[in-house]
Length: 226
Image (cartoon, rainbow, N blue to C red; front, side, top):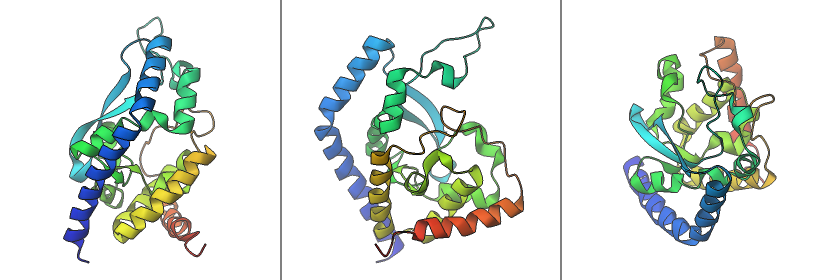
């Protein structure tokens, strides 16, 4: 099957699956929205610009997990101080990302692909790391399937580049299954000492990239024979 046909099928599957999941999970959406409203107040949704397919900026939707508490100078407190008990639960179960199904339906995202990152990282990528934007960003992806936030930034980018270079519908299916397993285990939600991950500040060394690329191929190949 040629690449264009596979991409067209990928989009059709995204539309069908997002519509179906939005319908089936509508009671969960309503319950989570109500809990956020009661514990944190409005707004229920968190909106933020992210870099998507081919560098296009779009607005991502998530359920809100943090308060808007600020210090005396009006600056937001660190994420780990603003993350609520409900927010921790939503993040550990990945329920906070359910509204991204609307992004999938709109075409901003896919069910599977590299996770969309902050716009402020745009100028920090190497050409190899920028390759992650050759595919639509996803709800599930090679990073979520392989360890999430216990991985280093170099390992994450290497996994994304590996995914772009080896993409197929069959690979998407395997990543969906592995991501579901990782979510059920509720592991790798945050790096030690952070609500999620330390900010990306750029490539550390070319040696890190080479080592991470090798590790990416090993991680994505694990379990294929099981």
